[in-house]
Length: 172
Image 1 (cartoon, rainbow, N blue to C red):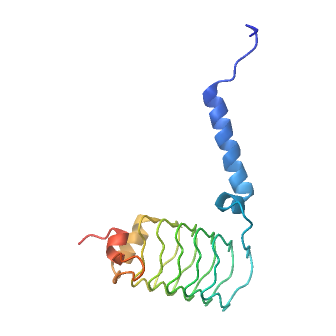
Image 2: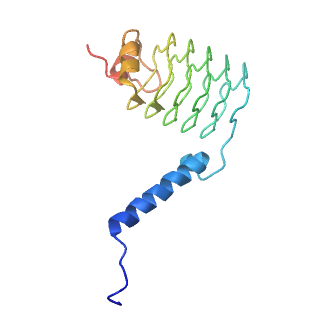
Image 3: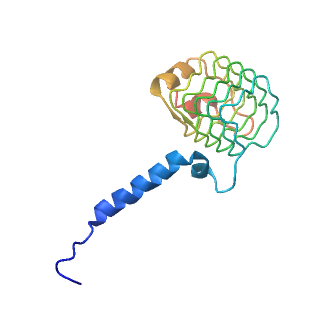
């Protein structure tokens, strides 16, 4: 090795690699979730659409308008619903495990017996949503949202057997 050749700092190289990976995820969010192509409903009006009991695993619903959509029993595992509007939607028995639910409106939505384990629910509105029997195990949520949900959490999820209050980490 030539003594005048500069060596790259391994920490700088690691930081650069992480930055490039982050930029790739931002530029291609679908690829961040799956290698196979996903169903993409970005910025689509899906008001009152019936998706009941459909396999929508890894689907993308970014900024989708889904007011009163029927997603009962749908498989939405590892899906991306960032900024989606699910006002009054039916998500009874839906599986949203591992999904990204950032800035989603679930106002007056029915999440009865839904599975949201390991989902990310940041800045998500769950006001007046029905959460009876919903499983939030290991979900990432804002503390004040968890506190509000604990005020009305009841039931046990029939699929996972997990108590809703327990899955939220409610006291008592």
